[in-house]
Image (cartoon, rainbow, N blue to C red; front, side, top):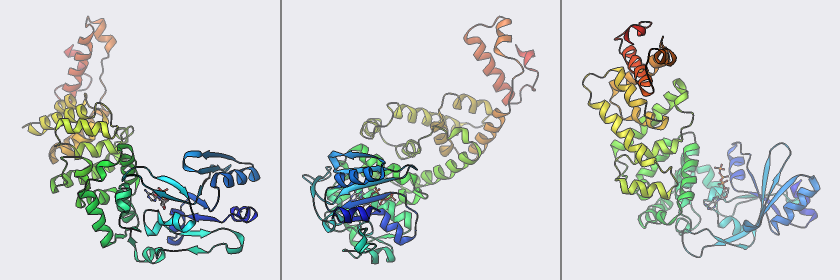
Length: 395
Ligand code: ATP
C-alpha cells in the first residue's frame, strides 16, 4: 500500500534497517521504518490522510510517525546523510539518496532496504554485502570512523552480537577497542549511554553482553574505577542467578526494582564515594543511590561477620532496606547466610503475632514503645524464643 502511494507520488519508498534484517533472519519484528527519497513528513502526511489515521510530524528529525488503529506504528523518514560536527555529538541531517542513507547506519546487517514501489516491489538493496554478513553472522561497521562518530554503536554492536549469537568482525573489534581506549565513550551524554544499557538489559541474555563489555574494557570507561575483574564477574553472575530466583519465588521483592540500579550496585561496590556521586549525576541515577549502596554494604558486612546468625539479625538488617538493597545483600552474603535469608523470608511471611498495637496501647504502651515491643516480639518468635500464641506473657 505504501508502495502504491509512493508510485502515485512518484516517490521511491523503502522499508529499511532492523525490519529487513529480521525479515531475512526470519525473526519477528513489528518496528517498521520507512525511508523515502523525497519529503518524508509530507509523504507520511499524505498516507495518513488517505488512510484516515493519526500521524505526528517530528520537524527536527524530518520524520513522521503513522499510528494505525490497532496500535501498530510505522515511522517514515527522509533519506538522509548525517554529518557530525564533532565526534559523539548528535548528527546534523541533510537530504540524500537511499544509498547514502544506508551508509550512515551502524552495521552492515542493519543497512539493507527493500523497495516497496509497485514496479520494483520486493527488490532488496544490498550495497555493502550485508546479506553475506547476515548469513555468516558478522557484525561489521561500514567505515572506520563509525564508532568515533557515534560511540553508542559500541554498545549496540555487543547487543546485536549477543542477541543473534553473531561475532563482531575482527577489524570492527579493533576499531571498537581503539575508540574505547581513546575515551570516546566519555564524550557521549549519560542518557544516551543509559538508554543503550537499558536495551542490553532487556535482551534475553544480558550477562554475556556485560562480560563482553568487560572484555572490551567498556565498563571501566563508562564507570571510572570499576574494573571488570573475575571477582566482579562472579557477583554479576550471582546477581542474574538470584534475580531469577527472586522473580520465581519472591516476586514481591522484584516488583519496583530497576535492574540497572541493581547491576550498578554490583559494579560500583568498590568505587570511591566521589566517583559514585559523579556517576549518579551523569546517568541520572536516584540522588540517594550512593547512600543506598553504602547502607546495603554495611548490612551484608555485618551479617557476614556473625558467628551465630539468628533470624532476628536478618530482621534488623532487612527492615531498613528497600528491595534493590535486599537483592544486592543476597548477592553478597556467604552461601550459608544466603540460605538462611531465604528461610527468613519464608518464616516472616507466615508469622503472625497474636497481639496487636491496640492491645499494647490499652496496656499502657505509648508511641514508639508500641512499635518496639511488636518488633521485639516478632524477633523472639522468629528465633523460637517464644511459642506462637504466647506473646501475651511477654507484655
Ligand atoms: P531492535 O530490534 O533492537 O529494535 P533495530 O535495528 O530496529 O533493532 P533501532 O534502534 O530501532 O534498532 O534502529 C533502527 C535502525 O536505525 C537500525 O536498524 C539502524 O539501521 C539504524 N540505527 C539505529 N541506531 C543507530 C546508530 N546509533 N547509528 C547508526 N544507525 C543507527
